Image 1: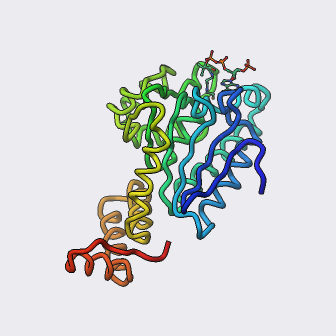
Image 2 (image 1 turned 135 degrees about the vertical axis):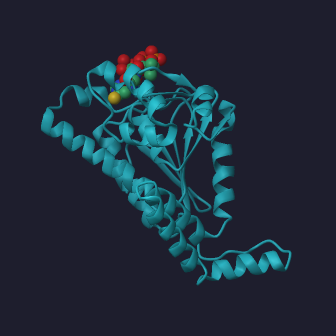
Length: 260
Ligand code: COA
């Protein structure tokens, strides 16, 4: 598929996805969301893709939110449908089974912050700004912000951000646990790629099951989560990956994992 609003490139096992509407600060209009849905499906299903990096075009914004023009015209039913569509795309990304990093190169507001939170890790430029400003527009977050933000930073800090609509800088985002690393603007993509290549050098089935255990475990009781973890632990013991990883350690050599 050719995209009008995204750049999509696969380089040595990594899909680089760039939301490409820099004149509108990469705001998520319906076309971007439809194309993102397609791109996410491709990331999830293409065997040549081991992981993905998502970023925004231009020096100023990762994504400055859902397109406010689209939102201004919606009624209650299409508003709900838009939220559910967006939630579906982000959830598919979060559960695609492959590691995904948000390379946050500027404003990550509203839907932009929500998309970054649906990624597994976030690398931010020192110039990045985060926020859920929906209350200023008379709406509430609709692409998972009220659910993922408290899971990432805790209820009190999440409510402070969501109820005030205030923007925070990258250092503060790092301090509260919203981002994993803060780097110079020129290094955001390179650092994201380095981080992802490090993960892709690990045993792919183990990585996949770690993503699944953390994602599902957060919604389970401790006992259910521990059982899921034990099941994964047992399952991995049947894999060539575990044989190779443990053998390589005992033979004092780096592991050579196959299967990606
Ligand atoms: N939806 C639609 N268009 C948007 C947008 C959004 N979420 N965010 C920015 N844009 C557009 C602006 O309308 C402007 O378009 P124009 O040049 O055709 O007028 C262009 O992007 C540049 O934005 P501008 O506001 O001029 O840049 P700025 O540097 O003065 O301000 C922001 C940057 C991010 C502070 C400001 O654009 C903003 O507050 N955006 C909305 C953020 C938001 O509320 N997001 C949540 C939506 S649910």
